[in-house]
Length: 220
Image (cartoon, rainbow, N blue to C red; front, top):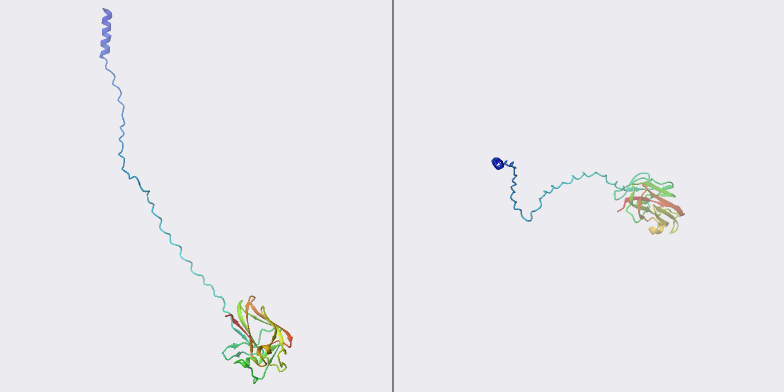
């Protein structure tokens, strides 16, 4: 009987205990964001192009001095004052020769093939060289000749050679070239000056070289 009473007491005591409430746990609720409706082909973002860069201003042109204009030179051998021809061209007095002699003829001597007979009435002869300073460039050189010596009576009476820069004329016969005595003849030579001066050399063969005029003109 005692055991029965004790067991019931234990049962009643145990039945009166309240169950310990469970500690509440915080639950985090994640609400998904609605998905944005994007087009299937979304273009890549456009990057604005950089504005074109203007080129720097052109440099001002540098003033370059033009090449010097080739001079017009006319020299009258055998005359020691200036001479003006029928076209108004002024010829310089005799100059530029390394050596030689000069002579002149009477004013009444007739010279054919020219409007300027006075040009051929004076001459330099027996010379070996002529030189004249010039800007480098191309020139037309005109050499004037006329046979006015009484001692020359036909072709072969005066024969010589001359060289204008690199142009050589061998066995030059004034009488033969002009077609007789007291007749003007002009030998035109195109040359290029590269050393600052025009050079002409003469060499005798029969009698002495002679010349009546030299023109140095810019090449056409």
